[in-house]
Length: 220
Image: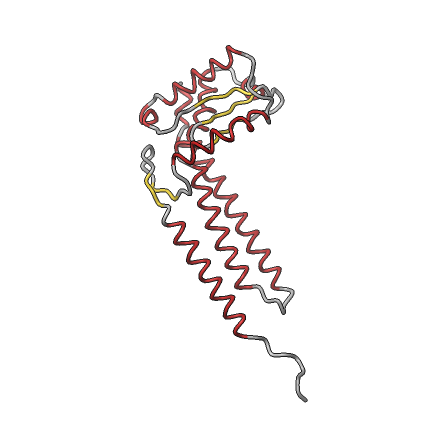
């Protein structure tokens, strides 16, 4: 008895594998071509944007980010204190040689406890967090952590890593997908989820490393 099922077109699968391989190779080459040395930390990094691009991105996003937390604080004394402690951090050691111009913003939001930094030196601190800190040392510890993210170019690193992961997971999805097999869609979904987990763990490791590298900032 002969089967009436149409034979699977092998050449199509071969074409998908070839395309997936090309995407993977291009993604890897593009990532490793972003290698550079951080002039502040001396660390070899893979970054997806130039210093000028980081600066432009940080300045462009700064007003929008501030607006999400109620805008700039109206407490002149508190704002001056944040600026003073923040600038003291920058003048310490090799940090003064940074190409970035740091601005420290105290935001009016008193309910949110948060501090964060945009690329190239825009550092934000909510009043909700500020009012929980008693000493300049505590304030410097939090600001120093955010300064560390900027100096170590974590945003640019994460962007490069995300592009690489996206390329590799896309290649894996193309290679594993079979239009004649509905189950292959699950493999593609798993590949995308793995990529998201990798990027999440990468971001968490940067956060921990930045906190460790700048723990001495509490002395300010």
